Length: 279
Ligand SMILES: C[S@@+](CC[C@H](N)C(=O)[O-])C[C@H]1O[C@@H](n2cnc3c(N)ncnc32)[C@H](O)[C@@H]1O
Image (cartoon, rainbow, N blue to C red; front, side, top):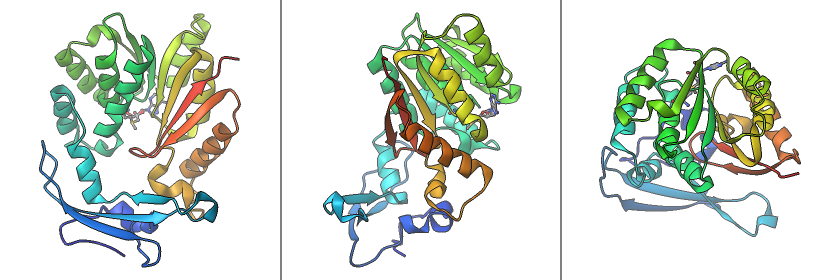
């Protein structure tokens, strides 16, 4: 195992994905460097370790291993609007705070929405609103986000921050099971009319959300799916709980799904980007 006195290693890295930080002298390099303190990111000394892809056919490709110091560096180089920061800070005191997307993920979602010139969006799983706020703030004034959530208490916090950011008029909150909301949208004739969708709710329904959203987004529209790396558990065959199995099945399915172009991005807990093909 490889640690540094100034680097806090999160417990999930030590337990469920120990291989991420384990080091063998033959395949791993380590560079330690001081990192400047920025915003509320802790001052750290980062130890960067790399490994090499296990198959020689990747030509000895070096893979950066994420650790606490490097993640703090990433956070220190992530832009986060003040309202989003305040929402993150309030949520951090709540039960379930780790469900919130990370700042660098929020930044990426906003970037995608802007790049696409998206106007009509759907989110499945709002919680206290971090990702939906990031998306709503990136939308033009005429933009529209259908926000699906079952929990009224967390929605009340989301609403407070939509108001604070001046985006309430862009967010259409739908309280209830997301499957029902998505079916209602389809029954209302809204198929092929959405630009962007984000799935971040109960893992066992991901496949159903994906199928319904494929009908709702337009050709060249994008579906982003969170948690596809599931803390590393998808790659650990000893993990056989329902959520892990269901995410593994979805990952296999979208890999071979010719209806979409795919890119799985190792950001946050893993984000799969699925662009609906034109045919
Ligand atoms: C991982 S959290 C979402 C985090 C959110 N994207 C953020 O950035 O803060 C998942 C949310 O999905 C909600 N949820 C769970 N099952 C649901 C369902 N069937 N329909 C709608 N929302 C659901 C939960 O109440 C929870 O707030």
